[in-house]
Image 1 (cartoon, rainbow, N blue to C red):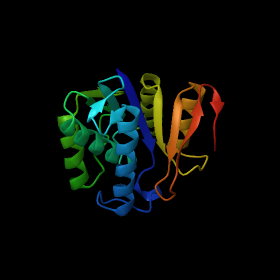
Image 2: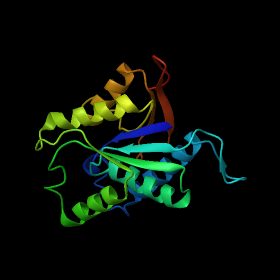
Image 3: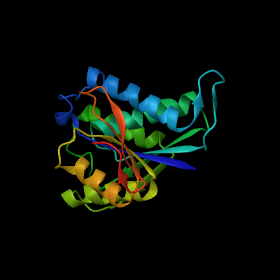
Image 4: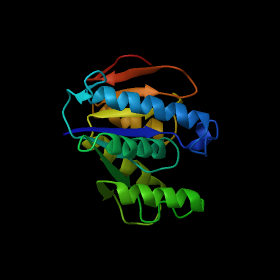
Length: 192
């Protein structure tokens, strides 16, 4: 099984894209879909996959990039049954408790439709549990898709640093720019 995880910013660092239909989220979702299909070896002409399947897509279930990734994963599961799986990595017991009602409903819908729900911790929210969740996701995923603005602080940066330390292949995309590139592979930085 191939496993790919996402790390990424929350809406406040994505042009305040709190609405899933915000243009930044639409663009991010399109790029995520293309990336996932490419990683799975999808051939559009034959509508077949040459890569290893199933492909497990792991989301840390935060608002922002994680939610968009999970929604893309659910759509791919419907389009290509048996090819994609969604794993939700929950960092703490009350992860979504402070969110808006609409976001909590979406969160629950995603969990209800996931193939695997992993509770990294059942403790109540503590900031360091977000990093433990990120470490879990990187530990099980050889490939990391980072929705990252390149700023060297915050949870996404910490996750990218951990993934580099673990020598994971990291692809970086930031939807306010127009490029996706491989950031790190096999112990070497390939671009910045």
